[in-house]
Image (cartoon, rainbow, N blue to C red; front, top):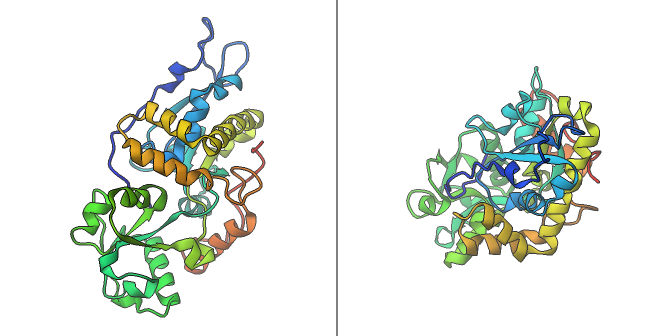
Length: 333
């Protein structure tokens, strides 16, 4: 599940060139005398404000201070988790709803969430005000742009029926939209988005919309999206390196929280193709939401994490009950 975002040119950043060069010393996988240790980090999408803390840590040299050379990679078509699980990267950005099936299958991927980028689910359903979708049951008789996955179907069924509506009357049509607005202005009444991006874009455009916040409608749907994920085989062998990476990354997100304007400028420096007004407004929106009510940036609440996986298991979206598996706060500073 990936909420619609503008199709922007990918920034395939060889950002390790921005890190200090070791005066003839190369990058290695263990750190030490031969130079900084290499970390490959895979994005989940084009660069956006979900990633600002990463770029801030890179730009401010905080990875370099931890003797790390971080290379930021674009996601492959089959997703960041497969690349991460195959050992071709150490860290990635992904989502809890995708991580569950990856670790709950018969042959689980060696991956685990180590930090929440945003403390609460900021995704939900956006519609034009003219569509009259004020609450979930209003989706009956309307056209919802769906990716056709069991998860999306289960979520829509849950919120519509939970509001006393007729799920069978919801017109689930294929989501072939390039962006949310072209969809809503043509043949779609409602579409799944991240409010921090498309919701803010609607505000800037002056488009009158309604937004159904999934986590507010059903607390079990207040899942963690996106999250920072690590290859567990690598982390088990390099626990101190993983902690150093999360220490620097945490500094990046703390900087973005305290300095949203400067953080937006940093993101635009590395992704100049982005709409500057959107980035700045989105950065302001997320500044108080990265950490939210968590004790520290990145901390995952076990109760909320396991509640969502229990919800998935009860709807047969997971092959087994994984409980609170799939995450740890142990690498956070």
